[in-house]
Image 1 (cartoon, one colour):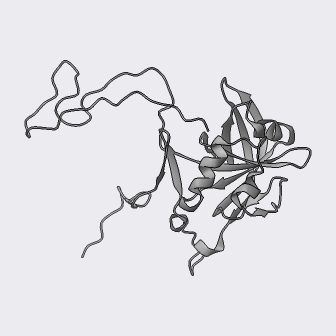
Image 2 (cartoon, helix red, strand yellow):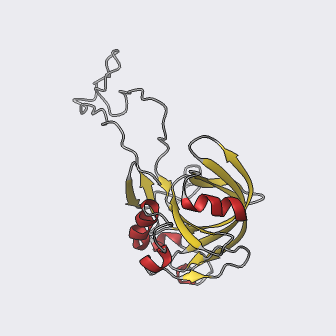
Image 3 (cartoon, rainbow, N blue to C red):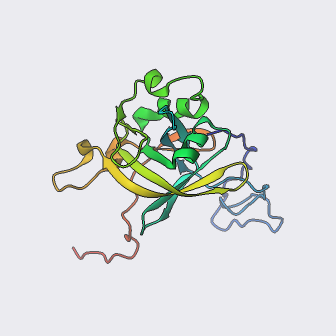
Amino acid sequence: MKKKERPAQHKSNKNTGKNSKAPSTGKAKGSPGHGKQEWKPGNMLYPVPAVLVTATGMDGQDNIITVAWAGTVCTNPPMVSISVRPERYSYHMIKETGEFVLNLSTKELAYATDFCGVKSGREVDKFRELHLTRQKASKVRPPLIGESPVNIECKVSDCIALGSHHMFLAKVAAVHISEEYLDGTGRFHLEQAEPIVYSHGSYFALGDALGKFGYSVRKKQKK
């Protein structure tokens, strides 16, 4: 996951009164958000999950790579995608075997997440260096990371060459969750694991919950 610098943000003036309006010049004055600048096309869809992807080569060698370009693409069948630069050490492993595991990262794994994004598997055994636990997967060859709260086993269905990155589309073969985040009813509480996200070269812990899905249209209960 290569970090990129971005231009300095344009600062808008604070609102000086209720009747303040943004001028027709388009400059960032008045209420926050009224002024806009157009930047050249680039990756601005942030924040994104920073996931630890495990892969295994045909020779049995394991590696961990940090990927920020990852996401859900389909519910039925369950599918995900990751985008990887062809020059990355793990690329040929995934390409040859057609398998990988997505391991969700947490605040506790923040150091390992950064390390696996900047250090090549050609130089170091990341499992050994970071004292991470290899756990056997049930459907694929790459191992699970024991310290991750969620491990998603994936089988590649297609690889699309897009340019700087190639996108691997994959079907979810199995999901593993840490039992310590299950409550008495069997509900999984990922928030207790303190997941992290990546945005503009920095890692962030997630904040407070703002509402559950559908809360905006849910009828209020009478007191």
